[in-house]
Image (cartoon, rainbow, N blue to C red; front, side):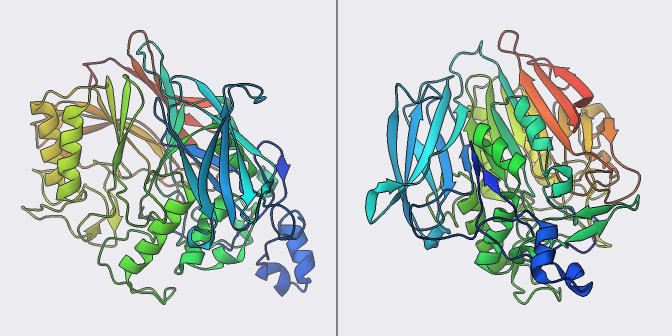
Length: 543
């Protein structure tokens, strides 16, 4: 995202829970404001976060950071956990919440410092279209009989029958622009609201953390109220070391609504720029005094490892080099094509090249996407893009960050690659494509039509934008007319960087009807409001 962003704030902490409330290890708190006011560090800590007992490594291992599931298909899923020490991960599953029958045990990896004591266990042979209850235990490697208290979660496997519908949510941008976990607000309470909708999964559309956004203990909102952040040492500066990147992911896990949500709702995790640094691209050398590490490729490799350690991804640990783009199949109604518009792009530029084979996807990813779209037999093909197509996102005075560059004429620069993809979708008669994205910190619905476009060799389609889920809200960007977008709906503030109190978080909902196959998109706002709704019919997506 390219928005004018204020200083980022110092870091957070709190207590964790999954099924029952669990106490977190004590974390030293950065509280410069209180210290400057003459208060003792202990008093400042008490004002910043609730007191928790210090971690003792005697006794049994503890799973203090909750559980997650992800990449759920009809017959498989991944389950994630983090231990407080070296331990063997064990997962038990059952169709019963009480685990009184049908219990199976899965032996997972040994969790150690190489992966920051995180690990993922793959579950296979699961029944389709079924609520699976699971609990994770951590076994002491020296005495396997000594295990942690179980931490429970659940997920629903994808259906194999078309008549079973699908419901999922999407959004992006968490704890950015200085607005972190505010205990006075109950944390990121939007996750409790989303959990109540009981979605099949959550598409986390990038900027899952703000590694370049330190948090201060307090921030002043435009209306004069004081926002109070939970803080931790790792979030007191921009992330450069692997441990600092890991700390940015642990920060989000301090939020109880977020942990409750993760325990019940599987995640499809996507990354964008703030997992590394604002507007980064491969080969970039930084001119930023906050960084001692100037090579973005080094930072990206560390961020990639931390991302893989803190989300349930299919690639093996340390998951630093695994391909980020992939397709997640969710039964006969839905395939989700998760793009990586960050790793394979060319440098940000004015975007006026008349020949640009690298573009924003890279040649390899573009070829993969065309092949997989052609092979897909799902009724709906959601293209999960971490950046929008037609919204102009600047990077400085002359360069551009996304696809569009403000020239309404024929495709140039990165637009050439998107034109090739849209032409392929039309000529191969691929139906049911819908684009979902976040990144720009407001919500919108945009219909692209060839009769309005400078490039007309494509079939009409919709792009829906959501977010932020817990960061600063920003005014709407202008549209580039190359692909003929019409902004059918937009909800954005008039001034930049409003807090989640001043501009409540946005998220999107997609419901696919199992009987008629219609896809309904709802753009939502925290508090239960449905801001906009559109029903799409199979075979007539762009109408």
